[in-house]
Length: 127
Image (tube, rainbow, N blue to C red):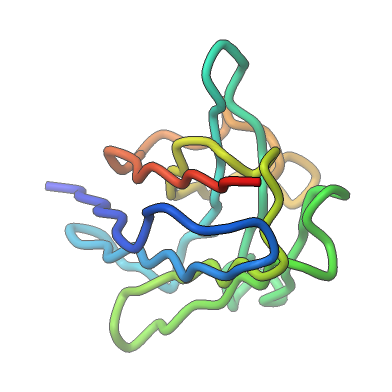
């Protein structure tokens, strides 16, 4: 049974940091791209970052608004993916989800290409 579970959300002040973690089970972790998405209240779910699986090059991609502030990383030995979030802004407030995919690299930013999702963790940034 595939399971993804996020943790590490909470309340932070603008300019502060949080580190999200996601533990995966039930599938061969290293064979999957691992993405982070977020959904703010009243808005659609949006791509944040992805860690491409080692077999496809192992790169990381970010949405423009978080480049230079967020860092995605993965530990294939522990089946973990992380999102280090620095210089947080009020507009980063959202529920953050991790998800897994085997999509082509051209599609790794698309939520519809991810079939397994965690339950989400709330991140609230106060200004």
